[in-house]
Image (cartoon, rainbow, N blue to C red; front, top):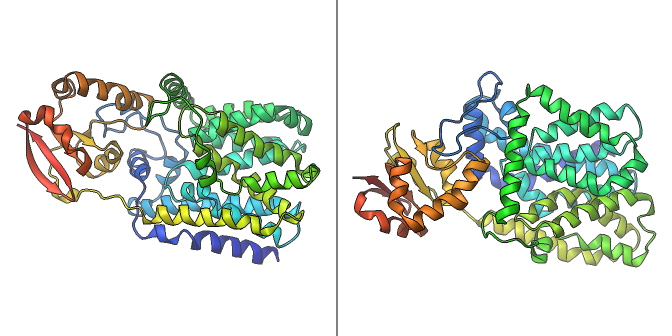
Length: 441
C-alpha cells in the first residue's frame, strides 16, 4: 500500500503540472535565476552579476544557483522547473507520512492530494524560483525541530541552514513560526533553539561567511518594506480575506472540525498550532504579499482537513474549496505573458537599456547583450524601482538619461507613454509584439 500511495501521489502531483512544461522558462523570476546560475564558477558564488546597471551585486540565497550550476546550460530551464516541482512533491509525501500517523487510509492519501492542489502550493511549485526549495526545508525543519530524539538535532540544524540558503521568505517564516510556537516547541523539545543557532552557524560555514551578505540584504529588504509598505501599492495593511480563500481555500475545514468537536485535534495540537501560527502571520503582516505565507500553512491545513473529515465533518463542505482551487489554477494557466522577439532587438554590449514594465527586466537582461537599468533582486534594486525611478521621472526625466547613461529604452504596449517627456532625445528603432525599442539620438 505504501509503494502504491507514493507512486500515485507523485504521478498525480506531476500530472496536474504538465501544462506548464509546454514552454520553459515561463516564470519572470526564472530568468533571474538562470542569469545568476550562469555567473557561478565551479560552484563559487559571484560578487556581481554583470547584467544590471543598478544593484548588480549578488545577494541572493545561493543554494538553488549552486545546484543548477552543475547542470548543462541548455538543460537548466527544464531542470529549474522539475527541481521546484520535485521539492514541493517531497512536501506532499511528508504530508502523507504525517497523516498516516493520525488518520487511516485513504484519508492520509487524500491529505497529500489536497496539498498538491492548494493554489498557494501549486503556483509556488511551478514558479521556477527558489520558493519550492525554501518550502521543502522549512517544512522539514518544523518536522525535525519538534522531535525529542537528540539524533534529530543535527538533522534539524542542517535543514535550518538549507532554509537560510534557499529563500528569504522561507527564512523569515521559519523564524516567525518558531517564535509563535516557542512555548509548545519547548514542551516538545527543549533543545530546539540549538537547531536554529547551529543552523545559522552551518550556513555561515558552508558559504565561508558569505551568508552575511545575504542576511544584510534580507534585513535591508524588510526595513524598506516596514518604512514604505507593500512594493506594488506602498500601503500598510493586512492582505484581503479574498486572497486567503483563493490561495488556501481549505482553511475553513479545520475550523468546522473545531466547531463540531473542540477535542478533535487533541492529539495533533502542535499541528493545529502550526496552522494557526501561519494564519496569524498572514493576518498580521502589513507590508505586502501576505498571501505568500499561505503556502507555509498548506501542510498542516491538509492534515487537519482530513482529520476533520474523519470526525464527521460533511464531505460536501470540501467541494467549494476544490472548485476554488481548480478555478485559480485554470485561470493562471490561461494567463500568458507576451514578450518581445529579442532576436530583432540589436543592442551593442556597451549599451544601457531601460525596460518597462519592470517585470520584463530579467528576461531582457538574459536575452540582450547589454546592461539593463534595473537591479538583481536586492534591496538596492528595490529602492531604485520604488523610490528613485518614480521620483526622477516625475521631477526631471532627462536626469535619468544623464545620470545612468541610458542609450536605449524598451517599452511594452501599456507603457509607451513613458517616452513622451523625453521623446525628443530618442528615436524609434523597431517594434515587436507590441514592444517598441527606442535609441538615444
